[in-house]
View 1 (cartoon, rainbow, N blue to C red):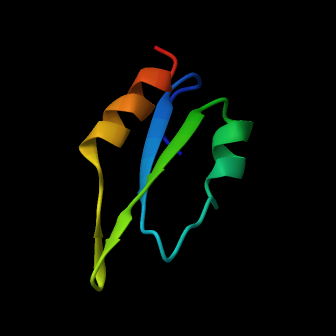
View 2 (cartoon, rainbow, N blue to C red):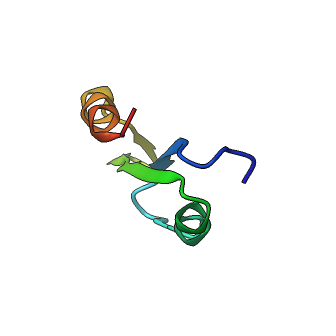
Amino acid sequence: MTLESGSSVLIFQPPTRFSAVIKNTTDMENIHYSFVVGIPKGENFYIDFGEVERTLELIPS
C-alpha cells in the first residue's frame, strides 16, 4: 500500500467474487477500509451510486 496512515480506500466488489484480502494490510497500516458490493446484472454487475455516496459519508475525514 502506498497510502499514508489515516487514508481511506473504497473498494467496488463484484457480487459473485467478494474478497477482502487487502483488509489485513489496511488494518496494519491504519488505513480505513470500506467497500460497496455490486448488484448483479446478467453476467456483469453495476454499482448503485446512492450506496457509494452513503458509504463515503461514513468514511472518516
